[in-house]
Image (cartoon, rainbow, N blue to C red; front, side, top):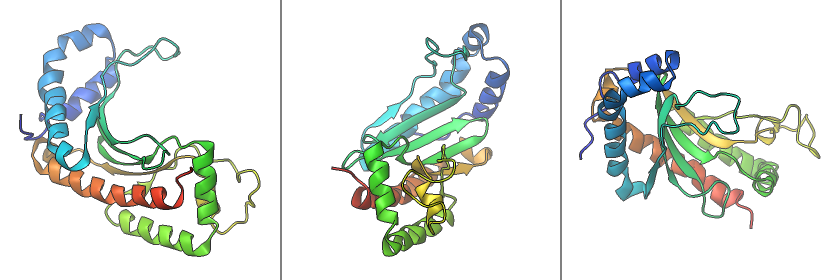
Length: 216
């Protein structure tokens, strides 16, 4: 099935889900979810496989077994392509549709201690840090910004809070993200071109991580 856009009410679906996140409402809206969100999402994933490899579409149900938050459904639809976080050759590409619009990006969402240590050692080199800053500036011009994640409060252990790259050293998530406002364009095949553009740029950031920060 070719992708021709999300349903015109796809964003509104998530707005309403935010106010009615329960099984009775979901059951009454199941067909709407399928036609406006799930089927287009699967078709979009198929459009991307040839260039970016297998795409994993996430289920809409939340795992609430060990969570105090018992809302049964995710208030976004998402998929991911690529490999594991922080592994040699790794790095993922991400797409999310929600009430806020479309979010695109990727990188290492949950890098391990070895990957963070390698990244911090890399950006301690002024030349390497300058190369990364130049790449980030280029990505920022298209809307891809470093995701702040959950940074270290002051400075990582063993690093000075006065370090010239302290903003990078504090990071615990090494990913870029582009938040795109909702609009009529989401119901068109323009979405495919936007995703391809942002994912290609994101691959450059992932490539930088693989070259400079992949731990053995």
